[in-house]
Amino acid sequence: MADARGISRRHMGLGAVALGGGLAFASLPADPAAAAAPTRGDGRPALRHGSAREAGLLPGPLKQLVADAEAFLQPSPRHPWYAGAVLLAGRGRTVALHKPIGMAVRYQAYDEETDTGVEFPPDRQIPMAEDTVFDLASVSKLFTSILAVQQIERGRIELEAPVASYLPDFGRAGKQDVTIRHLLTHTSGFRAWIPLYTAPTYEEKVQRVYDEALAGPPGTAYLYSDLNLISLQLVLEHVTGRRLDVLLREEITEPLGMRRTRYNPPASWKPKIAATEDARRPWSGLDRGLVWGEVHDENAYSLGGVAGHAGVFSDAWDLAVLARTLLDGGVRGRKRILRPESVELMFTDFNTAFPGDEHGLGFELYQHWYMGAMATPRTAGHTGFTGTALVLDPTTDSFLVVLGNSVHPVRSWRSGSAPRVAAANQLARAVPVRPARGRSAWFSGMASAATATLALPALDTSSGVARLSCALWWDTEPKADVLVLESSADGGTTWEPVPFTTRRPGGTAEAHPTGTATGWSGRVWHDLTAELPAAPGLVVRWRYTTDRLYVGRGAYVDGLRVEKGRRRLFDEARPADAARLRAEGWSRETG
Image (cartoon, rainbow, N blue to C red; front, side, top):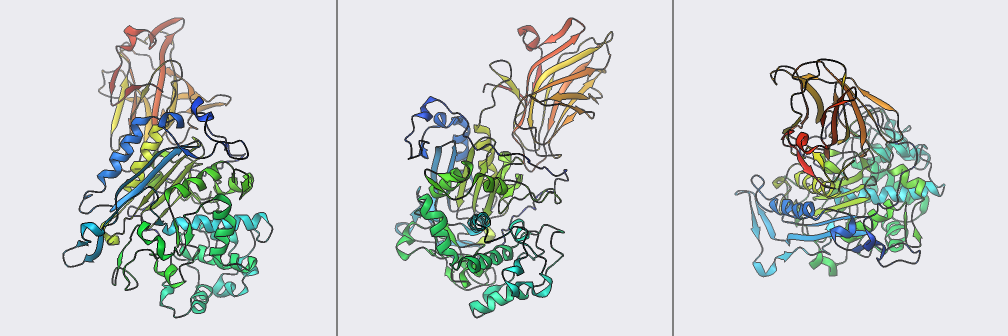
């Protein structure tokens, strides 16, 4: 089922971000305790549970992550966003948070007249557990994509080859130019979905895909569609001679030891599976009653539970194993499922022509609407309609799994992606930013719909050239959230932007003629210089403004100094000067 995202994804209008070069998959150092982790046969530490400190994370934000998630068990605003969830967060090879909350099975039905859930008796309700299995919905698309990239590696599929070269009937209705890449990046021109479940036989469902005309020419627009991954499934099954569920088992789950990941879980798993929806018309395409232990998506159900776009069941730990494998370049222990260069393609934006819809091979990239402050041009992930999400950030070597049963008892109770965003914000916050020059630095905070200012005292810059210098670190939602350097010569009545220049380590100088910084800066400290206007009582400040939707990791300022010739008008390193800074919304933070 195409993921119902509530608030539409933001089209940022930025120039395309091409990654270029190789991705860095090596884990970031946590502390010596991490080196003592048990190892696999190749000498690398195995994935394990550990403390926030062992993962190189701050414990406070992880505690807040859980508190934020628990808040969505309550009406938000009218109904709970989910009946329960399993949260998992880690960095390097340490899972620092693995927490079940709420109920895996709570409701036996949905009462449409009263818009309430009919609960099971207390003794038949089942709480969430660390190993609760979820219907992943569209997160299943990642597995299909990995299987496709494996076949590209082996030469059985070519990325730029027409799909019709493998499935001649696919070329009907003007689809002869759709390529494998178009399917993997949702640029084929397919509409979002069609009700395949109304066709009586499997063969007729496939024919409907073949007969489907495109909404637009291939490669001219981004349009998220389940039909892309269903088509890819047909290609994979044709070129390998194996069903998709067999491919999943033999090529991914068995090599990686993912024992709780499969299509069509057996009946014996049912007590450990989170229930989904009381599926009845008109909100569902089929009358099935409480869906529990079977795939929720109607099309996947009608395809026998095995589909390229939905149908995979898994638990949080198995998804952490998958995340760690990809962050390690496709290898776990002595088992390799992808080459590093293939993983790089999954983390590389192929949709540079469609800013805001960045997409690797199968993975979505740089999507603040569910990745929150974890979003960077290299952050990859996917969501699922049932309330699931997986996010991988190679920049910080961190990973997040949010598995919720948000369509239990009915899909209309939830909207948007707020719990996913909240969890991602807190994991991003848990990755410390080390001060550039001292023991602490000024931090803007990460509040939405807020303005934070950090102002220097009034300075006399009326004679000679006065220059401001400092270290600057920023990562904001592009264009929506902006950091501004500005000055006032009339006591704060009016403010004018101050142009500045930044230089990252080993990089060239970058001019900011409008006095602003926004978007991705690489999450490294930059040296900043700015020539200040001449005035007898000039006030200079940083102003960080966010909109009401999403935020990035924020901004940091360290080592503020103003010099005029050899004279220092202001130096944050001097306690008396530092005491004169006026901070509203900014705070001092240690790394």
